[in-house]
Image (tube, rainbow, N blue to C red; front, side, top):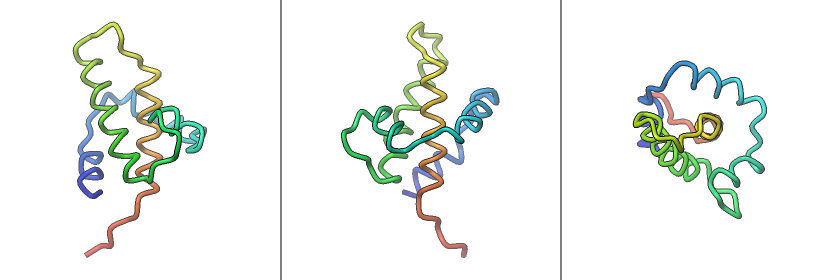
Length: 96
């Protein structure tokens, strides 16, 4: 799990994408949005969700960078919103 959080902390994306995702956090509903984004019938744990969402976000970022016409900025923002929200639900590591 800490590997996923390390990857998330190192994530560098355009400011506009991040700002849009932060704005969307207020409307995020785990039961509705996470099932749709992960195409799952049951809700995964926050750690599992973060791993799934990181994989999807990496795919979307690669599509964005290559200029592929199938890229969806709306989908990318939805995944970033879910990724931020799920990361907040993960257990925090105790400070050393």
